Image (cartoon, rainbow, N blue to C red; front, side):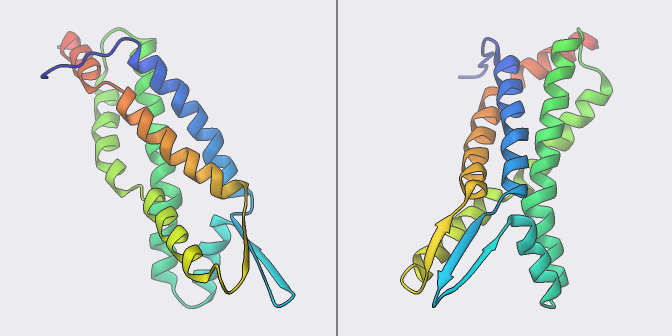
Amino acid sequence: MLFANKAQSVEQAIALLMASFVLFALAVTYPFLSLNASGLSNQISVVDATRVLWESGYPLLAITCSLLILLFPLIQIALAFAVGLGILATGPVSQVQLRMNVWLRKVTPWAMADIFLLGVVVSLVKIGALAEIHVGIAFWSLAALIVTLAIGANAMCADTIWARAREAL
């Protein structure tokens, strides 16, 4: 198949991206995990995890995690949302929208919330026998965010974007 040109792909992508904004906000504000072991209890959020890395003497790792887990997914959501709204709001795609689309394609591979979640799940399996673990709303929000972003990326039809760009030429 050479061209997909999905019907209402932009509208579907915008709806999914709006859900992604909400899920991202939940994922970074609520507790991600709580651990109970030997009478001690602790809970952590995604933002706390990067802060703890910084305070533990790993500033490069803290910055990398902040970029890959927090900043790049947020940029991905914002750029995709802006491109989608631009396609709906105007006739032909502007040069700014094309540049945002190019940056979206560059940022997307670096948004690694899914890799972070996979690492957390592996860690939970390893330490599950040592402590009582409770996953919080942020864990489920991050999992839903990953699924929503994947479906949204699939819904955003690149053929529609480039066909609208050709109209502008």
